[in-house]
Length: 433
Image (cartoon, rainbow, N blue to C red):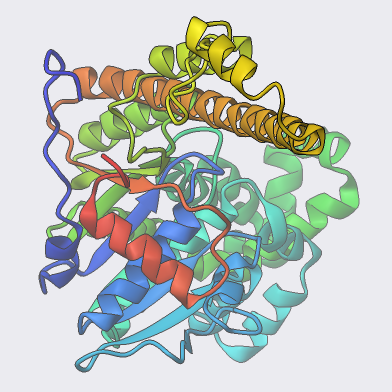
């Protein structure tokens, strides 16, 4: 960091993972910044340091399963082989949104009513893709995992979202919908019962239902009313569970990690996450800054590297190895030439060929060196841009602890890669810094 900007506190990742009071870690951030990889790497590191860990991912891409050597992940936690350490173990699962919703229905209603709900067309649409359902079910699954107490650390990889912290807002929105005025209107006929209920609906709300029929279609309206009648006893539970999970996220023992890359857009959204978490009184542990570039030769600036490359390409640098560049026309050289004039012509030809070969080799070396200098200059320019972006975030949020994760040369696709990420997380600074 620049001296003027100050150095942010370093995020002590291992201390966070080792603390038995840490029971939930939520990785949040914009899409494409490495939340899934970060969550998996934290899970591997925590398990190998003795924690019983489950990683819950909502990422539709199946990179997590592949990197952990599991054929597939589903709604059931599966043990990851090859990860162990002093009693620790790692399980992983991928949220199945519809299956989680089905489990709620099956667990909170008798078999006959559950079957009616599961077969209802409106329920099938709602459970498969209603706005906010995925985020609600992620929080529902988190509550289920926490209540089982089979693991002492739960790591959540939140859904990628364009709107910051949708996963916090969605449970309340869905709970409000399922417990709101619209649902209560649709429940009225079922509560009154039979013909009296239909008479009530037809007389008291004929205009409203006529409008709804036009908007939704008569068939869909009937499906919704059937769904509401079957779900009557469950609606209050959705709001109750949403509120309980929200309180769980605010409680001691939960830690949020905001994940970002060192790009302007990602850190701008990270700043919004930090501010929103503070407004909701959510416990923020710090910022994980992924894919940070470093250099082991940062004493050579971009400007000096470019200048050296230009000198090499223009032939302006003296050949320091031979010590004779630029001396071929000197008197000593002429004298040597006269002394050798009577020598063997064949030897002169060989000497000329060797000189040409040396010159060609030196030119090749100069070209390669200039290319490397230009690559170094580009790297230093990237590092400087990332530094300025980090400084802007730090100036806005100097209290936020930061762990910088050095960029890897390739994608993470196995446990070894996840361990490498975990080591960089624990170190907290990029390579070469």
